[in-house]
Length: 219
Image 1 (cartoon, helix red, strand yellow):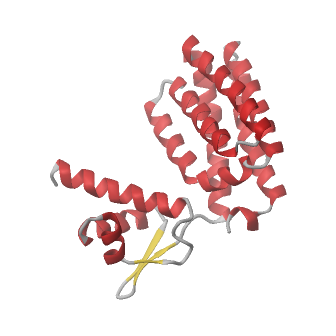
Image 2 (cartoon, helix red, strand yellow):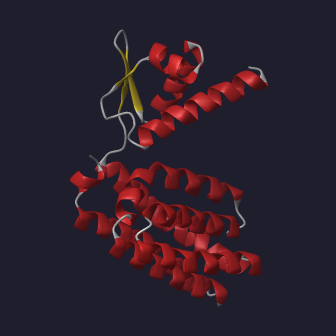
C-alpha cells in the first residue's frame, strides 16, 4: 500500500472512530459504506478497511450479508479502561517523578492555575481541554513513548464520559485539586506518592461516575 493510500485509510479510520466515541454515531446504528464514503469524499474501499479495523477494536460488529453496526463503549468497557488507566497512570507518574523537567513542571502548574480559573467561570470546554493537556504533559514526562501511546489511546476512548463529568463544577474542582497534589509529589520527586495519587485520581473518577449515574453518561 502506498503512503497516500495509507494516509487516506488512516484518516478515514480515525474519523469514523472519533464519530463513534463522540456519540455522533449511536449504539446499534448501521454504518453504510456508501453514505460514509460520500460524506468523507472517498471511495468505499478505505471505508470498508476502516470498518474492519474498528471491528478488531471492538467498536463495530460486521454481520455477513447485512452490514456494519456500532457497538460503541459500554459501562463495563469504561470501568475496565479506568481500572487499567489507574494502574498505568500510577506507573506513568512514578516514572515522571524521576524524569520530569522544570519546563514540564512549570507547564503543569500553569495548567492547574488556568483550570481553576475556567472551572470557576463554568467554562467546561476549556476545562476538558486543559485536562487533556495535563495528562499529555504527564505522559510525555514519563520518558516512555510506549506508555504515552497506550495512555493517550485510553484517554481518547473515554472522552465522551469525561466531557460529561467535567461539566459538573464540583468534579472539575476536585479533579484539579487531585492534579495539584500529583504535581506537588512530582516537584518533590517523590515517585511513590506520585504513583499513589495518580492511581487515586482515576479511581475517584470511577466513583464520581457511579454518583452521577451511568444512564446520563452513556445516553
